[in-house]
Amino acid sequence: MSPDLSPDRSPRSSLLARWPWAAGALVLAVFLVLLAVRMDWIPRAFKPAGIQVGQAGGLVERDLWMSILQNGRKIGYTHRVTESSPDGWIVREDVSMRINTMGYPQSLTFHTVGDLYPDLTLKAFRFDLQSSLFRFSARGLVDGDTLIVASGLPGEEKTSRLPLQSAPRLSAGILEAVWAAKLKEGERLTFQVFDPVAMGQRPVTVIAGGREIVKIQGVRHKARKFDVDFMGARQTAWIGENGDVLKEAGVLGISLERTTRELALEGHASDASADLTEPNLALNGDRQRVEDNVVTILKETLTPTRQADHAYLVKGAYLGSDPFIQSDDRRILAQAREIVAPEVPDYIKILKIVYWVFRNIEKKPVLSVPNALDTLENRVGDCNEHAVLVAALGRASGIPTVVEAGLVYQRGRFYYHAWNAFYIREWGKWVTADAVFNQVPADVTHLRLVRGDMDRQMDLLGLIGRLRLEILSAS
Image (cartoon, rainbow, N blue to C red; front, side):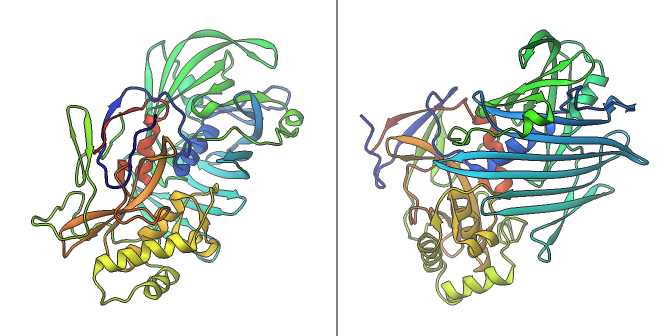
C-alpha cells in the first residue's frame, strides 16, 4: 500500500544505491543534454558509405550514417560528414528522431557544425535543435579563454561570454583522439567538452577496455571496448581494428550502430520510442536536512523567520538573465508588470506569479531546451518550461528565484520533476513553489536534489538508474 503523503506530512527518506522502479517523467533538459552528447560521441564509420582520404591526429575524413535504436527499435538516424579544412577540420552532423515523452510522440532534429583546430579543439560552432513546437539555436566563437555565444531565434539573439576552463572540444573526434593515443587497457583520458544544449563545459572521461567481438547487422567484427563517463552516466563504445566506431550503448536504452545511407533513411517505428521516463546534490539546506543518510523534509510556512536563512544566496544572485531565463527581455518584464504591482509584498507577488503560470501554461510534455521566452509565447510545456518561466517572472519582479529539480511523489510513485524556490528578503527565508500544481509552498513530497539555474540539472545524470528511495515515515 502506498504511504499517505499529503501536503501537511513530513516524510523521512533514505537514499540508497540503486533505483529499482522506472522514473515516469525524466527531466527533459537532462535527457536532451545526454542525447546531444550521445549523438556527437560517435565517429560513425561504414566502409560502403565512408571515405578516408587523409588523416591527422587520428581523425579521418568520413561521410557516415548511423541508425539510432531504443531497446532494439529504430527511432531515427544520424548523418555526419567530417572533412579537412585549411586550418583544421569541419564536422557536420544531422540527427533525426521520433521520441515518445509521456505518451506524446514528437519529432526531434539536431544540426551541428563544428570548426576545429588541427588538434581537434574547438574554434567555432553552430547548433540548431528543432522539435514539434520549439526551436533552439546557438552559435559560438572561441576568443582566448572565453567562448562568445549568441543564442535565440534569428533577429532576437542574445550574446553571452562564457569563461573556459581549458581549450574546449566538441564531443566529435574524442574517440578518434583516444584511439590515436593507443591507450593500454585500464588507461584513461579526460576532455573538457563544450555542450551547446547546456551552454557549458563538462568533463568527459574515456577508459580503455579489452578486446571483444561485436555483431553489426549479423557480421562479426573484432573490436576494442571503451567506457565513456559523462557526469556519472556510463556509456560503452566498440571501436574496430581500423579505428571505426562500430556500436555504442548506454542509458535510456539508446544505442547507435553503423549502417548504410539507404538503411538509415528507412522508416522507423510509427509509435516512436519507448516512453522516456555521486553528483553535486543540494540535499541539505532550508527545508531539507540530512543526517545519517536520512533526508527530513519540513514544509515551510508563509511567515517571517526569526533568523535569516541565507543559504545558496549571495548578493545579486539569482536576479540576472541568461539564455534560458530571459528575465530582462521586454516581453518578460511586461508580463511581470501585468501580473504584479511593484508595491505589493514579495510573498503576494510569488502567489500571483505561480497562479498565473499554473492557469496560463498548458501542461504537456514538449521536446525542447526549456527557455522562458518560448514558454511565454507558446503557452505550453512540462515542469521544466513552467520552472524557467516562473524563474524569469520572479527575477523580473525583483525576487531572487532559482530552479530546483529532484523527485516528487504522485500516483503511488516518485517522478523526476522541476519546480522553483523564491528568496523573500523581508522574511529572510526561501520558499518553494510548484506552478504545475499551483503550490506555494510546495508539498513535502518534493525532494530537492539540485538547485540553481538550468545547467545544474546536468548533475542529475549520474543518478539515472542508480537511485533508490525508501520512505521511512510520514507525519
